[in-house]
Image 1: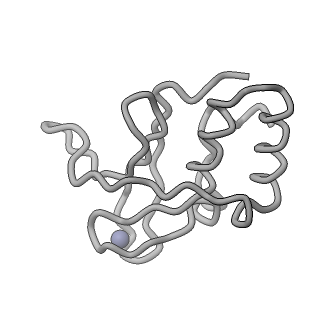
Image 2 (image 1 turned 60 degrees about the vertical axis):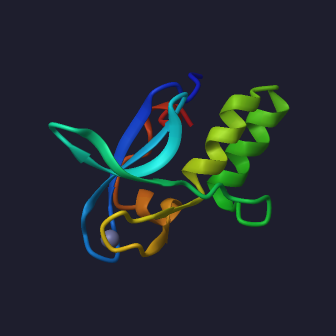
Length: 111
Ligand SMILES: [Zn+2]
């Protein structure tokens, strides 16, 4: 399984339906608005899930990654199943719930 290097995907904000780019990468873990000219603007740090907040498939993936000694992957899973602040309307939403209406990041498709 791959790590999260350069993993970018987009979700639709449940508050304002803006397309929010989510980055879980070596360059940072953030939510942003992707601008074709300026790149990712209005960046907001992602809020990683705590052990208590990891549920269902997220918890299972995290446990599996830890068991296999894949610490970077385990940390990435915390972000993917954590929360993001929408740069457009500042509402905070669960990425795990946003995933149900969008594709999972490529690194998780093998699960
Ligand atoms: Zn929004």
